[in-house]
Length: 215
Image (cartoon, rainbow, N blue to C red; front, side):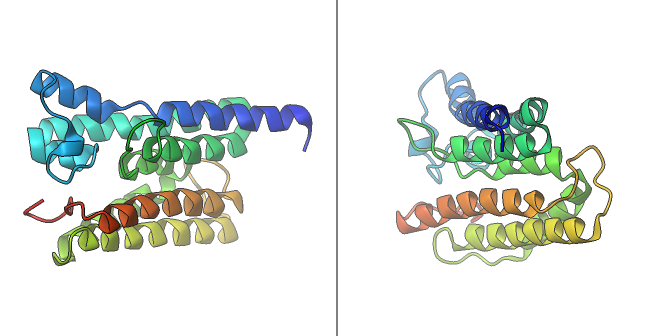
């Protein structure tokens, strides 16, 4: 790999991480509550779309979800402009990392940002992933704190990675996304691992379940 190629990939990853750290949930929460509410102290204590929806209502939650997904889309688009398809993958994964592990504060769980990555790089599978996520969330039974959300996330992540393997091996069309190569399942697996790590961390620290009625 040439020096310029490596520099472009590093640039894509850096831009993606920077986009990921933008705290849209915090911004929206402050505006909705005149600065009185920190989502890290309310509900599931997660600074993300689901907790924003439970705390402030559907409109606020949807706004946070769209903004967080937009981070993933923008990171992939800029990454692709800098370093082609590989840059799109680097940007998307880095945006998820930035959202989950921003400097100086606790991050979110990365679901919406990883959804943005999926829409940007793997649009052909996005409708299937939506059905899997919604269906699993509806069927899963409430259990110990966080377990329902973790189970739903694992199923969705496995579907994402498995679908990317199928598209890569069969060379299926991928709409406006990247060419299905071995990098597609690698990138989806990397983001999935980050998201699942955040869910597991919330379980270990006793955070309420975003998917449970009592959360």
